[in-house]
Length: 281
Figure 1 (cartoon, helix red, strand yellow):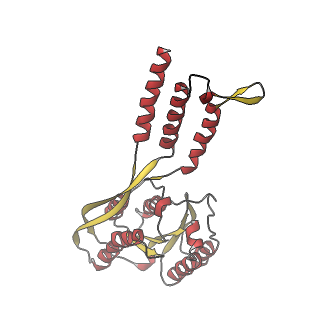
Figure 2 (cartoon, rainbow, N blue to C red):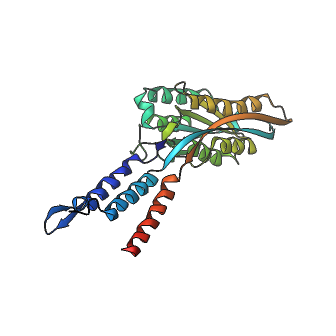
Figure 3 (cartoon, rainbow, N blue to C red):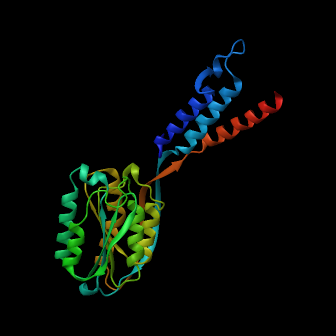
């Protein structure tokens, strides 16, 4: 089991100090659990347990659950004119890209893509949040200048990743454009991906609007292989299509965070015991 917000454990430490050390005058001179004859205070013990489980609940405990689903849809291919292509470049500027020395390669690959293709381009960068840095333009020097201006952790400067949410945003930007395309450059969101959308939902959205999603991975982790399998098959389908109504069925696997509420239920139960104890004394 892991926690989304482990730093919140400091709440328990501070609260435990307040519960165990009662302030008398100016100095902390009394430990409630060392009371004479009575031993450890039942009230203080319950307070500590309640605080502990409330804190653990606030830390958002979760497990990664592997799921599989079968996607069945159809896609009607339109005539594709290279000059009418509308492409959103989704650029990963999270800290992991620079820590693993992928960042310069990412910018180089994106620039090469722009130089060797045609159409209109928009640039979206993401880490903890995502941001549209360049709206659609066919002026390549402007797009390349935007790519060169990218810096690690440049949006929020607090770390993290919203890879799937940024892809969903890019699909939304381009889905009503002619010949829509999204090109993603990333090493994966990993355990820091705080996205609200799932991979399954992304695939459904891309296929619904016929958005060609291409994923360029950095690193050979399991998550990257998931994205390649889910998205690059759409590209192959679109390139193969020739004004035909194509049925598409594929089973994909994806990971999903499952939040646990056990600690919250225990905290509520202990709070009930605390209220009962107060009525009895």
